[in-house]
Amino acid sequence: MSNSEIIMRVSNLSCGYSNSQVIHDLSFEIPSQGITAIVGRNGAGKTTLLQTLMGYLKMTSGSLEFSGKQISSLSTSERSRLGMGYVPQERPVFPNLTVDENLIIGASSLHRSKRNQLDSVFTLFPKLAARRNQKVGTMSGGERKMVGIARALLGNPSLLIMDEPTEGVWHGVVDEIRDHLISYSKDHAVLIVEQNLDFLLDISSVILLLERGVVSKQITEKNQQEADEIRKRLTL
Image 1 (cartoon, one colour):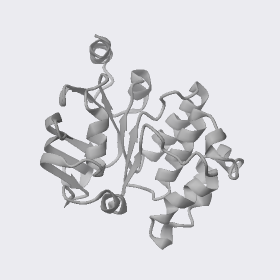
Image 2 (cartoon, rainbow, N blue to C red):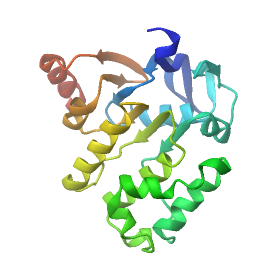
Image 3 (spheres, one colour):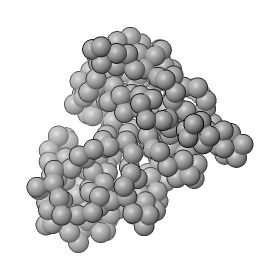
């Protein structure tokens, strides 16, 4: 791929925690459009990788390039301002606040010119529009995930990073999330960690299998034989 077709380049990345390295010399690229998925068993380092890409964890070696810029030393807020959005696996929202209040907090970190985009988010998620004044903690797990996604989308990030967006979500809401991601990825990059392999096979253009901190397999075609092999390795 040419540089113009790549939104993020991860080169020889190693990271982890003070007493253990989780990711080892990892390299991959994320296209500027479409959905790139990362799968792996529990403990493979998926969430650690996403948190490092967003700057919550410091890398121990390697480099990160985003939109042609080196971001290895940038803070999380600086990466967000460059166009990276993040939906974490746990607690993506403030449960004691309303839908509106959650979104307003999300918009507060944006440039002033982008802070009037709440209506565009409600157009994307009409169910939330009807519940603007409802406390998020009283909503279902799937609806809370939708609030988290909506908040991340407020800044129209060129790269949306998501950790387990369908975990514990009712299948009807999963279908909604799927449709929104497909639509968004037509003009943006999405990086998603997800256990639901069937969900990923349906929407992803690239699937990376992460094992023991390294990418051991990559699928770029919807090949049933390769998909079955990944499924087997995830359940061993």
